[in-house]
Amino acid sequence: MTATTLSAADLTTARGSLAQFLNDVWVLTKRSIARIRREPETLSEVTIQPVMFVLMFAYVFGGAIAIPGGGNYHEYLIGGMLGMSLAQTAPGTAVAVVSDMSTGLIDRFRSLPMSRAAVLTARTIADLLTQVIGAAVVAGVGLAIGWRVHTGPGDVIEAFALALLFGYAFTWAGVCLGMVLRSPEAAQQTGFIIFLPLTFISSAFVPTQGMPGWLQPIAEWNPMSSLAAACRQLFGNPNPAALVDAWPAQHAELAVICWSLGMLAVFAPLAVHLYRNKGR
Amino acid sequence: MSETPAIEAEGLVKHYGKTKALDGLDLTVGPRTVYGLLGPNGAGKTTAVRVLATLLRPDGGRARVDGHDVVAEAAVVRRTIGLTGQYAALDEYLTGRSNLVMIGRLSRLTTRAATRRADELLERFGLAEAATRAVKTYSGGMRRRLDLAASLIGHPSVLFLDEPTTGLDPTARALMWDIVRELVADGTTLLLTTQYLDEADQLADRIAVIDGGKVIAEGTPTELKASVGGQRVLLTLAEAGDTAVAVKALQPFAAGSIASNGSVSGHGGRLLDVPVIATDGLATEVLRALDAAGVGVSDIAVRSASLDDVFLTLTGHAAEAADEDDDKAELAEEAAV
Image 1 (cartoon, rainbow over the protein chains, first blue to last red):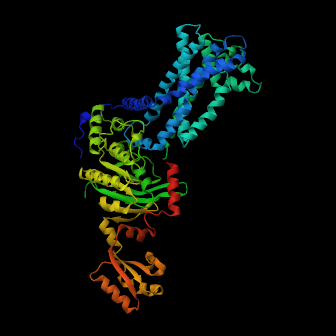
Image 2: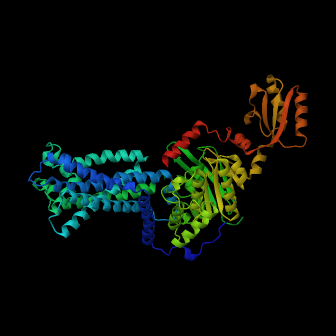
Image 3: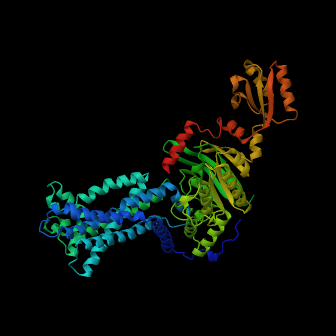
């Protein structure tokens, strides 16, 4: 049946494990991108949803929210919205991982002479690309409602870089969630339960100053607050966290970096460990 | 037989909690042969395949594929094997061709070689027309064929097929059988698990019957059938009360003890199904013996033993009806996967 046999020229010359890893990550990232091209509606959580949230908060809730230190709520909103729209891709990551695990496709990957870490890395890179789209959508709709940057390009680039680093760290948390849950529905619901309080018990949409005293430290130490504050500071937008006497509020950029690297250091090795031992 | 066996397993053990999915499994599969692993649900077939395909680490024992240890040299083994599991391992949203090219690229083929091989396999498996459609539009039979094609793209020398036809309609099953036969003609070693006796009978050179995680019988289909006597006598007695007398009269013809084979059954005790050793003039001899014992017979038939009989004789239960313990083992197996 084999009309052709395998010759040396048919095999990739990638001998080193790094070259093999990069090849496998590339092949699998293309797979995820092809999926998005076929089903663009999977992008709705980074396209339609942020637009809806921005419009609702800007025009429905925004008028009732006072910003300590003064300032325009529309300008305040975008820093928080960036954090929310990037972090909330993590449940989508979990759903994609559970789906792969449940179809048997992962078993096939694990029986192939391919890099062990490539499957998960490719997933996170594809999700990072969707986060870039999400960040662009938030910036676009922000500009449309009157959000403006009052600083230089260097600060703006740093703000988006921080937001994407933050989003990428959450992607690995999403992978871990996907590895321990059994069904896409469970991943969706668990993701919702984790990310809803994470987003709302923070300064993403409202300043922490208006929260009850016992809740304020939780909101102030929430990584979502740190990202929102760091972005507001870097964009030159109203940043009431500057008035808060808590370490993450005073050192927002450093706090984002610490939170992100900390999450990566925990969740990336954990995800690879869970993947290696899945069903063993 | 000085050649290295394609697959060798010695005393494989795998636990899932308290359930022993594998309980000292031994196997030797010669190169370029089709080997059937036959057993009911939960017998340990899938666990055995997952251990041999490097997906599961055994708790005890060792296994080699093409002479390489499946634990210590897993990376080498993965270059040798192809695996088609019970559930189609495909990306639903990619086209048939994209799936194959992706698997080919991950099997260390260049893009050009992977594309060429993908088109060749699509053509061969009758999927050329569907090649540019997303897999989620495929029928069950098409998925299985694409799945098999995916496991062949890297030119494996040892192929594992875990229940390749479970859930397929008869036409799709016949097509899978044809494909499997061609693979064998091509020189691939094939380990096939199945709960269908006719499938093992049709395709396998040798069969291991497994139950409770170990091999309980091994041989060619013919040898296995001969081991239970080769033939069976089906009798309908005139009087239900004659059963005990009839069994006693038939004992000299039987392979093993009739009662322990559980072959007395049905129709208010009038029907007897007895494994016997094949001899000339068997029916006449049986009727004479029964007549001498004073047992009236309303019907008699003699037939060749099937693998079903082998199964029933060896395990005490029918092949396709899993008992409760098997279900539990299967559940444990699935939960752990």
